Amino acid sequence: MIDELPDEQQQQAMNLMRAAWKVRTAEEGEKRLEHLARFLESNYASAAQSVREGLPEMFTLQRLQLPPSLTKCLGTVNLIESPQDGVQKKTGNVTRWRDAAMVARWVASAWLLTEHRFRKISGYKDMWALASILCRETAQNPEKQSRVA
Image (cartoon, rainbow, N blue to C red):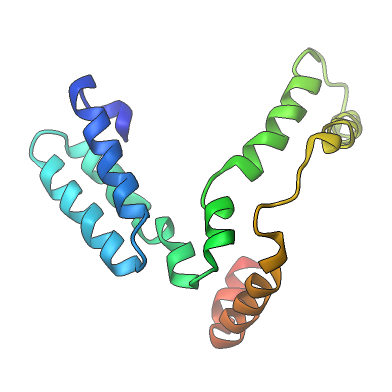
């Protein structure tokens, strides 16, 4: 979304998005991003559409009402990108994959070699709260569980 804006507007849009993500309620955050999308709509329709595209998913952590200690860590993509980067570095020089079994072996090996760099999740002592919230959500919305599976 940011790449679709002129350089002079990128920082302002990013600041507005960050401010929206820091609010306590999902409704308030969605309202702020919808306001940003309306502002962008006339001159940058594709950027406005990008903002609206993932709006419900952007505020999942606020909807779940996780403890702040977990929100800080789980609110980024670092937990996913860091290990993936390690696997990419270890497998990036392979130019010819013989078969799916070779891919599986290399990726598994790369994950094991990357594992030593893993650190504890910030707020790991509050993971019980996440488990409790997810169990509650699953019990309240059994149709969501069947869509994921």
